[in-house]
Amino acid sequence: MFNLILFGPPGSGKGTQSEKLIAKYGLKHLSTGDLLRSEIANQTPLGLEAKKIMDKGQLVPDEVVIGMISSALDNNPKAKGFLFDGFPRTSAQAEALDKLLELKNTGIAAMLALEVTEEELVKRLLKRGETSGRSDDTNETVIRARITEYRNKTAVVADYYAQFDKVVAVKGEGTVDDIFGALCKEIDDRM
Ligand code: B4P
Image (cartoon, rainbow, N blue to C red; front, side, top):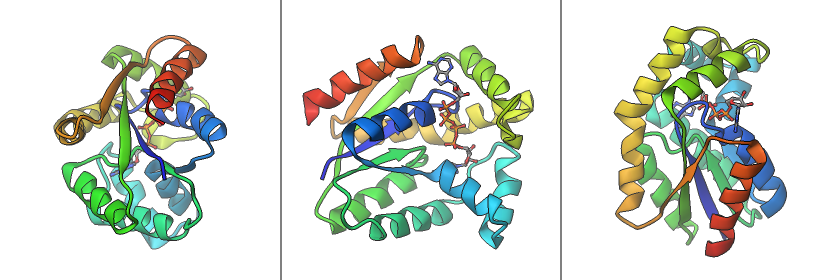
């Protein structure tokens, strides 16, 4: 199995690049953001609770997202590998992911970390908010709260993988195709 984490702040291009990466490498895409938005669209109790938190720009509790990832791993026994997008976002999630993968005798090959300036992130997310229908993209205060949440709780996840020498920084500004090319080069070097 070949498992990757696509890491970076909100709006850094994780969702955008994931689409292209799964098409090229045949990995199963696991996006906690997409899983949560699907719960919201289906108006499940979990989705209704998550929406209130996401609309404030905060992170959903660890046990909720870890449970979703655990089920998704169990539901895809034939996957040749996973691309984790937007997960793990806290140290507790990173440790839980390692344990879940260990149970399947596998691990993380690399964490690809997209680097983008805060002003560019805000610009991209406000632009997406004009058309996406995502309530967490329309308000600049909420967008900045997401970036603060990233700095306070998520940035440390890179330190966790750095101790195992798994972090690869990739410039996340430029054209989508140029960034995709840079990501593919790093992946091909490690496959
Ligand atoms: P996510 O769904 O993970 O979304 P995101 O971080 O906002 O966006 P992403 O990084 O994927 O967007 P992209 O750059 O592709 O999270 C949403 C919320 O869910 C979180 O705030 C949190 O509340 C909750 N959540 C999710 N996972 C969680 C977890 N593990 N634990 C707790 N809570 C969790 O796209 C941004 C825009 O940029 C797009 O419009 C795109 O077109 C544009 N763009 C992309 N690349 C570009 C480029 N090179 N140039 C110009 N524009 C570009």
